[in-house]
Image 1 (cartoon, chains in turn orange, blue):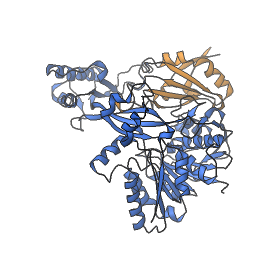
Image 2 (cartoon, each protein chain N blue to C red):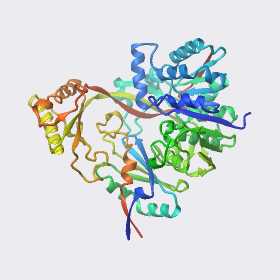
Image 3 (cartoon, rainbow over the protein chains, first blue to last red):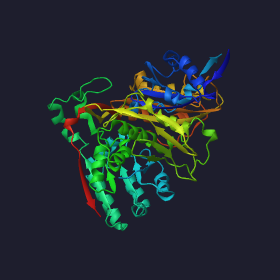
Length: 105
Length: 453
């Protein structure tokens, strides 16, 4: 087993969805897509964002884009102008996901 | 009927660079220029401006932009579609017609769309049995009725098409959805019907891709290190065909990049369920889109499937939800983190001595530079300096202002090495909250009005 950081082979974009954020992550090859689809479960992403996301994590698949989309509920300290946080719109959550290290065969 | 249409987006939000649209008009061919000026909170700001001045309440940046691109855009036959009307499309119309007259744009037709602003109709709508419940938590609108600042329906492509059919060269709307700035012209120019759901879905996806301007041409890309030409980054252009197929491109010679990566980045932006992207005109299935690179800075999107829309419009309601204040100062090392933490506790302890306290979830302390944005993900570190960012919120504005007075004193009555407080006392600002709701489509009627310069 080797360890790879997601940022070595995946790309991401994030933004706000009410009081949560969405984090879209995508890759370039089907093999990498099969890998992230297996490894990046909602539970794994929730653990990764434990210091940020206080709610549930939902996952959607977009195989045509080799992409996964995560909704991180309650991750913006209230969201919109209610939030006192610097990143009140989850703009940096995509970069945060790419910091994850995963085991690869 | 046209067999091809070039629609550019030159403004991703109110505050985007004015160079984007100016260069789109100047540096290559386009048929339409779409401009997005609205965010959820923008409408409440405009409503406040209008309450003080009946001639205000629209995006004045739009008029400044027209001052830069007229008469050139008119001479080139470029039509402009913008949601710059805010809560006062009539006043925006007046300002644009005045400007166009000064610029010698004789014969230019300027149109407005009205009917999205339902603020004056809220009581009537509530009485008619529309609960306008909060879509996120189900609360009844009556719980905040007295604190509502604005209420606008997200309207779609048919209203834009209707305004174009009435002859408008410039279409000014209020809360037109961002994608409808693109799908409206396509509906009109290609003679689609409002039940061509696959094509409307394709147009919606095209509009979604370009609605944030340069965010689909390399802006905010994970691969930023391989992207060049940032200063003259090209803004996006939809090259559309009547069957719903489209390409995303940008003017030749501009910076940035259009490739699969830049497009997929933006397809995922603010995405919920990709199979069911809800809009006023259709439901779009983002998982049906086939995205392929087709030459330099050119990406083809085809195969998009869509379905009928729901029976309701989404309504964007904003309301006044208390006050907040946030202050920042720089704490230099050594021991920057420990000193910044001490500063924060001094502020709240002093306020408590004066009888002013805030609950934990009503205050924030961030030590910027220590990994705040990626809390729990990056390892904590001891940087040579940090920015202490400290803030509170409360329904009572006086409490919030009292907080603002206890930050500057730290410079002389706290630990050493505190500096960088140039902004003065942070003042309480109103918290404007967003209340998304649904409204039956039969309760909303839009109208268009066109004036000739």
